[in-house]
Image 1 (cartoon, rainbow, N blue to C red):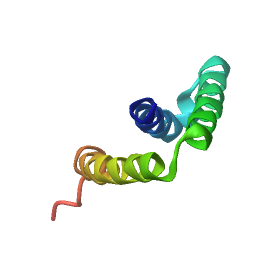
Image 2 (cartoon, rainbow, N blue to C red):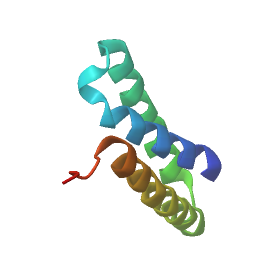
Image 3 (cartoon, helix red, strand yellow):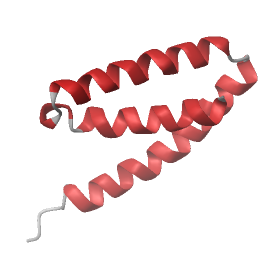
Image 4 (tube, rainbow, N blue to C red):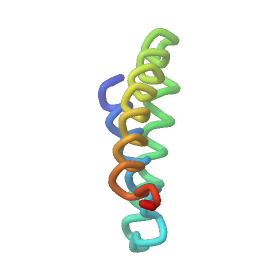
Length: 77
């Protein structure tokens, strides 16, 4: 359950980063994923919720680093 919640959070971040490019159907999928995530996390105990938060934080740090290096290149002077 906690692994599924973590995967959902990651996928939601990816999709929301491209929100403007998503079709109506894809946006509905994101909304469904958010509902599933809410249900999963509400059924979890505090230890599992904290695990998801910690693991997501580690992943998100790397995600931002890659996004910054790949898509936001510093000005070369």
